[in-house]
Image (cartoon, helix red, strand yellow):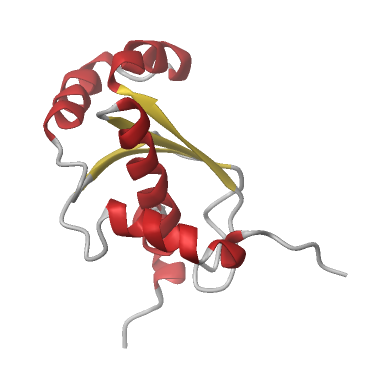
Length: 145
């Protein structure tokens, strides 16, 4: 029997795919809206909690996500202190990705920065954005009594 992802995550620290799996809809929405406003770019997502102990199937994780246009990548690299050897690969991905099907994502949390070009989504970014608009009430946090 295979141990749940949350157990393996504690052993190996690979929380990023689990985060993406749970938050793909809002990430796709940010990617599409950013593209519509600025053109090509990258979604930067900062996770504000320790990820090693998260049960991804039932725990909401606080995060912020914003779009960095291609023209502002150099500023982003300086602000985030990202390694110079990662820059050309990411910049090429930002230039060549298909925004109607893909997104470039930078995750920042309690580990090294995680950069990924998310390709071939089952629900592409334009559809994520449409669904976020029609299901907005589901994504608004309500205070607990």
